[in-house]
Structure formats: structure tokens, C-alpha cells
Image (cartoon, rainbow, N blue to C red; front, top):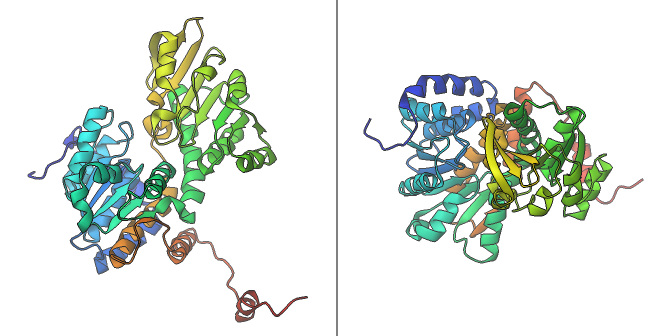
Length: 420
């Protein structure tokens, strides 16, 4: 094969294809997008570089983009999130160059990002804004020919808005994460289920009756808290935002600062998008055997260097668990090197929610092409009508019917003259 790529083992392709096909059964919205793209070819000839978690669902998105005419290259958005068989299937069966190996070093990770940018993309597709950051820092020569970028996750949107506020974001970006059909479902139901799945696969520890602390109460954290409570855990939420903290309290959770929660915790899972949500002060008061994990995009949410500095020994009692022994003999168990535990030790979000998220990504790419030169530099939402279209397609696939407004009702909602 003449194209350049870097995967673990190309012989894993058949296995990866079977798993992609299994996931595709739960992705009816993306399937309908693919069928239209195959007829209309709206991405014809456009060079697109994607930096996403290389999973079965991502494989089906890449196939959709390629069928729509795009010249696609894919790299991983996290060193531990790649499914090596899917990476091989995309290369061997679909002719899509992939640069991703599960467990790759940070050095190799950034080499792979460079390889994706060497594709000279006109559209970048991000999960965490690493490609956009690479363009702005190292490849400003690409900007003049770019349609723009799309962003999948909360952490990436936070970074992009910081870029926009500093005036350095010199092309438009569609914040896919801001679409209702993404964050209301992917973040809450997807992160909730897959995070608990990752914690259980890594530890095989019973959640029922344990104290489970969730860092933050955004949509990802809400999903984690809800699923942990459903497994019988006693859930505590920590927050810095008074409105979210109030909402958590009224949802029935105990709310307190992390340093107080850490004393009680059997489990702590962070999902805030910020750094050092767990730090040395928290490690100093944790129970012996406390299990800590992160479900935010980057591994900075847990202050791992401080934990290492406080430790006298590091063990690995199970795959995906680093056990730090502190000077007083207490043990703290870090899951998945502090990286996204739902992808480090599990398989990421279920296909049914990624169906909507990746339909958003595909339509966002088409939207950028249709609106080249019309969008201001900065962060944009996908239009609400496209969001609603995706929701309608999902309802149809689920065989769910809803009411329609009558002309009289529409008139009433758009009028101020009628009252009691």
C-alpha cells in the first residue's frame, strides 16, 4: 500500500471492520447522512484532517466523509483512546490514512498530529482543539485556504473561545458540542454510561454502598452522577459554579468542596475541563484504597506530579490501575493514567449517542463548505434547523411520533394580541 499511515498492526483490519459494522447498526442518522452524501458528494475534493478518538463510531464517520467526496486523514485525539483494529480497518478497507496507536508516547502523539496537518487540510475536525492549535502555532500557511474547523468536545470549545477572546482564531469554527443533539445526549448519556463502564472494567469493584464523588456538574458530570446513583452509590458533587451547585443539590446530591468530599470518597471521578481538580491537599486526606479517575479530555484534571511526589512506591495491581503508596502507607489508585477512563479501559460512548454527534460533525463540514467566506472568524453554533433535523431523524429511527402545531397554534405563539 503506497499511502503513508502509522497503525499498530494492519492485520487487525478484519476484526476492526466487523466491529465498525456492529456499531453502524446503532447509527441510523449517520447512515441516512451517508446515503445522501453518496448521491450528492457535497465534500468533493475537500482535504479534511480529523483528530478524534479512533473508535468504531469514528470509523463510520470517516467512511461517511470519504463517501461524501472528502480526502480524509485521521489521527488520535488522545494517546490511550485508539482502537487499533479500527485504525487498521480504515487503512486497509477504506483507503483512509490513519496515524494512531493505542498507548503511543506524547512524542509520537504530536508526530501524528503533524502528519495530519501535513495533509494540508481545508477543514480540520477536532476533539480537544489540538489541530487548530497546531495550525495557529506551526502551520499558519494553511489558513488562507481553510474553510474552517469543527470541534467535538467541551474542553475544545473552552480552548477555542479563549483563542477567539485573544483575537488569534483567524478562521471560523463550528462548536459541534454546543448543538443540543450533541451535548444533551452524548455528554450526559454517553459519558455517564461509558465512564461507569470504564471504572468497573478497570477495577471490578462494587459501586453499591460506596461514596462516589463527581467533580463538576456540567452535562458530562450529570450523566456520571446519575449512573453512579443508579448503581447504588452515595453520590457527592463538587462545583465552583453556584447555579450548577444549586441544581445538583436540588437533584438530591450532597454538594461540598472537594477537600471535604475527598475525606469521604471511595471513588472520585473528575469531568470539568479544568486542571488540578484533584490536588495534593485532596490526596493528603483520602482514605486508604481510594480510586480516582478522570473523564475530562486532558489528564491535567488530576495533579499526577504531586501524587507522584507524595508517593514512596508505585505498583500496577491490575491493567489500567497505577497504585501509589504514600509515606504513611495509604494507597491511592489512579485509573488509566488519569486519561479519559471511558476510552482508556472501556470502548467509549455507545454508538447510539455518537450517531447524533457525528451526524453533527458531517453536517458541520458541509455547512462550512456551503458558507465559505460568509462566516466571521470565531466560534459558531450549527444552525438550529440542522440540529432539529438530526433530532427528527433520530426520532424516526426510534419509531417515535410527536405532535405537530396546528396553524391556529402557530399563529397564537407568534402573536401578542390574544390573552385570557
